[in-house]
Length: 149
Image 1 (cartoon, one colour):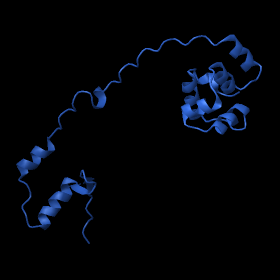
Image 2 (cartoon, one colour; image 1 turned 120 degrees about the vertical axis):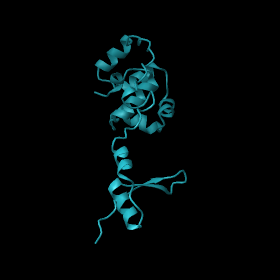
Image 3 (cartoon, one colour; image 1 turned 135 degrees about the horizontal axis):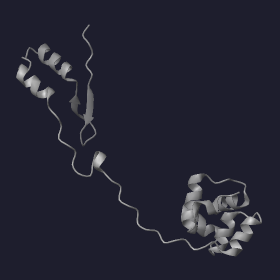
Image 4 (cartoon, rainbow, N blue to C red; image 1 turned 180 degrees about the vertical axis):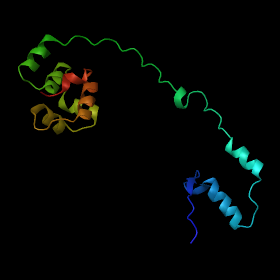
């Protein structure tokens, strides 16, 4: 029984296999099986010493993330918000009211239902980290400011 070929197929723009990539040893075996001469030894040596060109600028190890745009400093937390949160009120509720938003409006900002916001505010449901991030962005506060305690 012949050794299996180790082939990787690459799809074309239509999503169907368009290219086959295989190890050189398997390629030589295919040539031999088809009765074709293998490449001359000088050609083989040229393949062994081949080095791919470096990647274009901006790819691979050379790639650097651009610096994020400067963010304006956040305003200090209003004293009324501090007091209410320290007294045990839900920070999502406190910040929503501070911003003058209805539950419906806040829900619309993050793509949820009004009942979901109510569940977060009453503590019936603890929002995930991702939801807290969305709420913080919608309320224009720091992430830590909306985490229910």
